[in-house]
Image 1 (cartoon, rainbow, N blue to C red):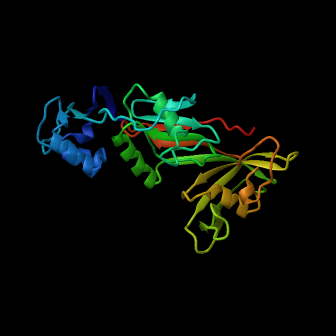
Image 2 (image 1 turned 30 degrees about the vertical axis):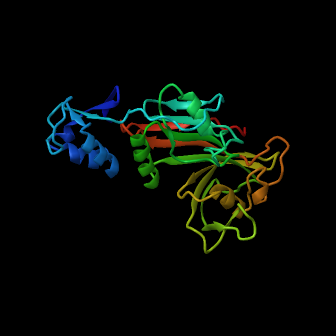
Image 3 (image 1 turned 180 degrees about the vertical axis):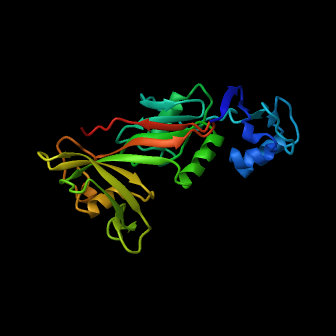
Length: 294
């Protein structure tokens, strides 16, 4: 884990022993995974410093050197703020994890849409001149933990981690029927349903999709099962499609065969846990959101 301190627009990183003898350029590219465009801009602006001084990027790192990288520059948020109380699950200088309520879009769906989670986050961070980026999204009716980056560099590192499968997202789903197996893996390709707009289906012509699940609790009196699911892939409506395909649609998910429910008025799906590496310090973090279905 790196020793990092914030000072104005800079992150001050104390170089660990394994960086001694390496060039600043090599560290930025290979260890900090700075995107090429960002590296080019920093080089042109001469804003990367070593021990507070601007030097050549080919210079070698010495023991106890401190690298200054300009990741906390002001970045105004263009979204219209939405006054909505947020449930903040975790926050530091670089990231924020928000517990999204159901019936709220992750981001605006049109130029006139000012009622989304990102608009609410804009209000929450209104005085900090920060333009957050959502690293992943949740469907409007799905609740739970969403990870956001507070600046472009953290966003780039987390986007890379998501693409590499290094951010683990675990969901809780309340499904119809009593699931017999304690755990299983569903491997079934998913494609658009040609007959119903906005619906997906299992199809041999679809994209590869893998969902792992295990039973958390069986409610025999209600003929329901609470399962937790991990996505190996990230297809649209993946958990909803896969659980329906094995005869256990989500409670109240009428699009995929679930029945209407008197107490749950949306598909019973909740993003309850995120496991990921903090993009600056390298600390492993686990953030959980309480499951609302039991």
